[in-house]
Structure formats: C-alpha cells, structure tokens
Image 1 (spheres, helix red, strand yellow):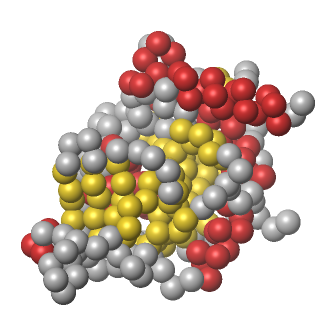
Image 2 (cartoon, one colour; image 1 turned 135 degrees about the horizontal axis):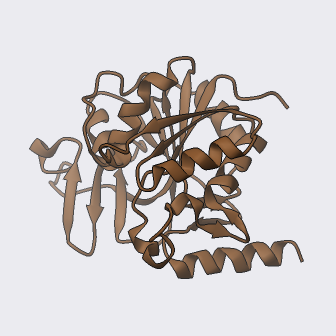
Length: 256
C-alpha cells in the first residue's frame, strides 16, 4: 500500500477538554486514554494505517505534554507541531494558522483527536483528490442539536442550532435558502469531525480565532464545499466520559 504523500493529515488537539473536565485537569484531552492508549496515539496510528505519513498536530492546553509525547515515541510518519500555546485559535483558526505546513501537499484531511471510527480514510482521500470539489465535510444522518445545512446539490449553505433556534447562512443577505414560494429548502446533516480540503483553500484567510463552521461558511461563498455522507460500522465522539466508556465497551467486544 502506497503512502499518502499527496495528502497531509491534521489532528486538532488544542482544545481545552472541558466536557472531560475530571480527566483533563492535569493533561490535555489528546492524552486521555481509551483502553490504555492515549486518544492521540489511536489517531496517529489509524492515520498511518490509512497511509498518511505527514501529520500536523496543533497544541494549546498542556501543549508541552503533547510535544513531549511525540518526542518520546517513534511513529512511522513526519509529525509537525502547530503551536497555539500563546493563543488558542479555535477549530477554524487553528487550520488557517497551520496552512503554511500544508504547502507540499495537494489536500488536507482534518481529524478531531476525540473522534474514533473505522471510516476508510485512504479510499476517501483518493476519491477527494479525484473530485473537482474544494472541500468535503464528512457527514452523518444522526441526532444532534447542531446541524450543517446543504442544498439539493449537497453544497453547504448554512448551519443551525436546534436547541437555540439559531441559524448561520453562507449568504445571510438572503436570510437563508428558499424555493420559488419563499419556503426554506435544505437538508440537515451532522458533522463527523472529519473533513478534506484543498491545501491552499484557506491561504488568503486571516489568521485569527474562529470556529471551523464559520471558516467553511465563509469559504463556501466562493468555493465548492459539499457534504459527503458516511456510514461507518462505528463512529464515536469521545468528548464526554460516558461516550469514552461506550467506545471502550464497543471496541472490547470487537476483539472477543
């Protein structure tokens, strides 16, 4: 199997881990363990298995611990650190800040450190490179209060928070999408924490703290940002202790 020399993988590992507060008082979320192994190690090893040999990791909360962890382990990949210890850039700003590190790649896969799944990232990376799209947001049809909104051509047009009844639109001047009758028309999909984009997509964006949602909504004004639905056998967001336990139980049952 050939390595993904044309695609960089970026692991978002700078978060404060507030939802795992009991476990992140003395370490970053990335070093919280799942079945005896840090989430970061799970993520790195999965990326390498999928052929990604250039990995960028952003750090902030207990960032020195992540740097020490990388220095103390020998992974079969070139790993670079995007250092946000002076200022947390949020999920979108962190990507923009790291953009210079993507210059030798055609595309970038972004992987939240607290996501674990069996998505075939090798296959999807090649499919993305073969496409004419500027970015793929890997999505799922699952229940969550926060949803990405896409038109009938799977293009990103907005975002919603159901619990608050709030919306953000790619073109807010239109107050959202509408049909000829003035009725809003869109498909709601949940974001998976996995996404691909062309390596220079955000090269001209200002380096500042911002969410990944705002980053893509702004980019979608002039670029082709689409939904790519996935149906993996398993996918876990390990942001809460109960989700961490559920993942441990599931993975333990897999090996029995």
